[in-house]
Image 1: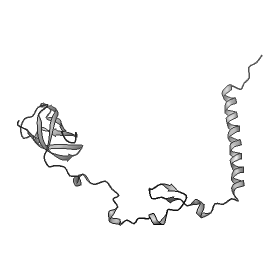
Image 2: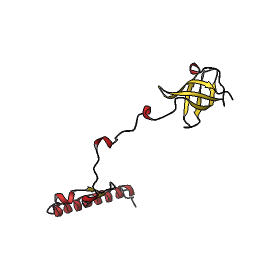
Image 3: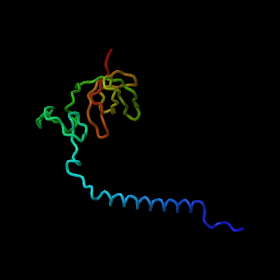
Image 4: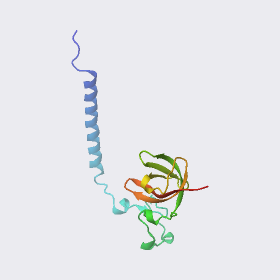
Length: 151
């Protein structure tokens, strides 16, 4: 007895294709039936309530608040606007004397800053407590004017 030339996958693909055609026909009939039922403009409008949620009912005019354009902030404040002390303290997490660079962890912000040997006022080593000023480098925050805290 000879085997059928159609495989299981071919049959499944054919069933899927026929189902897809039937779904398409049903959607087309539904669109034709609903063509006469045109929505009015009022049905399509959405409103915002006092909390900023989208609703289908207009908001209560008694709860309306007015804002001036100067009060609205649409951006993140710049790095310079944020108040940070000029001199900060931190702990040397890593420093390589041969390569001349390392990293300092700020004690307050827990930010990790890069430090180069040219920005040091004296020699430093790992776990030293230091004071420094933060600056913006080409690849991120950089510690400058680094001094070891005596104590």
